[in-house]
Length: 113
Length: 111
Image (cartoon, rainbow over all chains, first blue to last red; front, side, top):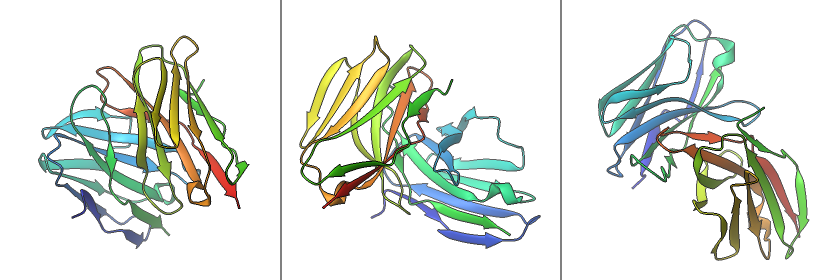
């Protein structure tokens, strides 16, 4: 069983389209995240949720809207996609508190053409 | 100044030697420190974490932390070709509930 799973793994879409990436974790964690890894491999946090509540929003354009229907799921919807949105998006989860060991999903490769 | 800095490499080490990866961080309030390994096209996977000053060993891996110097390192003994990957240093500030990553060091172990 995959601990943190996200779909789709690959996504190619045109500029201006709207797309969603779904994420689920079966680790029993209460905190979930979206990270973005750009072409230079720099991994940067976008959002975090704790028990369905938004905790961190790292100055991400409001075209990106996360939604957490329950603490095991965190989805990412992106409106009006731009070329610069092309990246790998990693969902992750952890327990809340010190240590904060984060476990990553396999990533979703988004290419905007 | 970047919050977490690593030499992007590439770092090339012969098989069987010790690979030494370094990381510095800017926030003195940082409490927890992590090393992740990322193979090309894969997701980051946790190798080790360290909270206290000093060394922490796990198999062939040793993490070293010096909070006074704001420095974290990872030593890989008896390097294997399978250790070739990008190594990401990550830092967590108490209560911040997020990991801040360095840009990663690409390590190549030469047979």
